[in-house]
Length: 228
Image 1 (tube, rainbow, N blue to C red):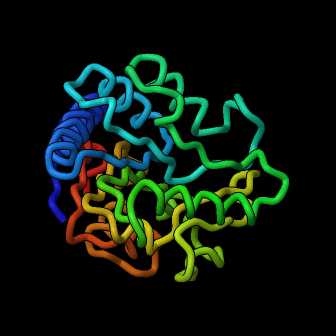
Image 2 (image 1 turned 90 degrees about the vertical axis):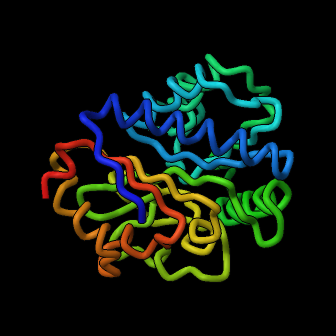
């Protein structure tokens, strides 16, 4: 894993946006398309707002979600709500280039299976995303892969349902989908992340984040999170 320590959360967000833009240009030049999956979080919303101002071949970009809370459309708990406010309102993306997890459907198992189909349609079979953006929770979770959840052991699906966490069920990409990505971009800020960041750096398999492949990973972290 490559690690870059920056001054503060805003610097991390700017650097992350620049990395995504560079990867987008390279992917479009090489394969004609850039597929990225994004997570939620305060610093990532700043990252996406910065990305809207970068030199990106937007007409060849497909945006997917790493995870999503099961909640109604427009709910402030939804990652999609903030994705729309941070990126979609500012970048020249068509509606059909944004692929929201279908968490509003009644049959959530069928919805997860359908999102797996979407992944294959956009990124091949098995799907290989160009970039997956991940965050790190103070409990060591990433995406909606949380400690003790049976979803951690899913190996036969790229998308699955996780149990309730912080009051909401979740839909999430699984380890197989994450670990095939051409780039894993970790964005980690805040002193409360420092203990788990050290365990992530050591690929500690006892925390969910530690089980994500590190060969193609870039970790952008602020000084507060890097304290240990």
